[in-house]
Figure 1 (tube, helix red, strand yellow):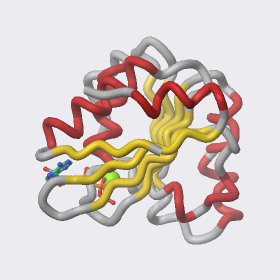
Figure 2 (tube, protein in one colour):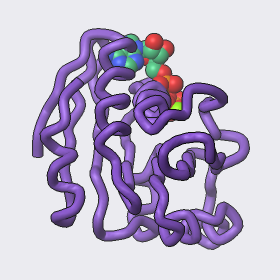
Figure 3 (cartoon, rainbow, N blue to C red):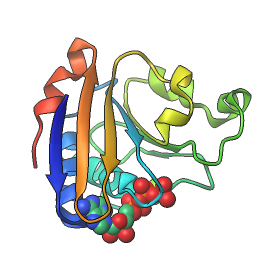
Figure 4 (cartoon, rainbow, N blue to C red):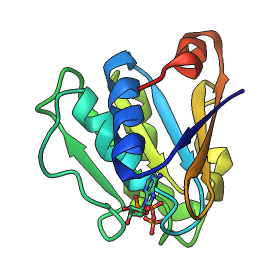
Length: 149
Ligand SMILES: Nc1ncnc2c1ncn2[C@@H]1O[C@H](COP(=O)(O)OP(=O)(O)OP(=O)(O)O)[C@@H](O)[C@H]1O
Ligand SMILES: [Mg+2]
């Protein structure tokens, strides 16, 4: 586990951009943290690091959005409004994990069983600056722990 502290939105975005630049086919970013913690800011940064500069919003209402204009396909899911594990099927998350692209999941901690074993867990906390912990599961994701903006 590694910890990074960011003092504002721009620093969190920059960390995300560095993570996106280091992402590889099959990379999974499992984001957790309270409402307003900065998950979507980090997700937009990851997208930018993949070369996706437009159209990344909070997918809270659509549950999952896909972006194909970057270096790798990106699926961005938000499980906040998902009420049951059964509904995960309709989100299409498991297909996204199989398709060789990059997947970002906001509120990933709500449905831990829905995640692949190999992933980078990112937990954001704090009200002024944000303390962001990066925990890699599986050897492929290990280098992502050391990524800095
Ligand atoms: N260090 C920081 N990193 C990220 N965001 C910050 C930071 N400091 C302040 N903020 C502010 O916190 C908010 C984070 O919003 P964001 O939508 O990314 O949160 P979220 O975790 O996705 O919330 P939700 O669960 O509601 O989707 C933004 O308004 C941002 O400007
Ligand atoms: Mg969000």
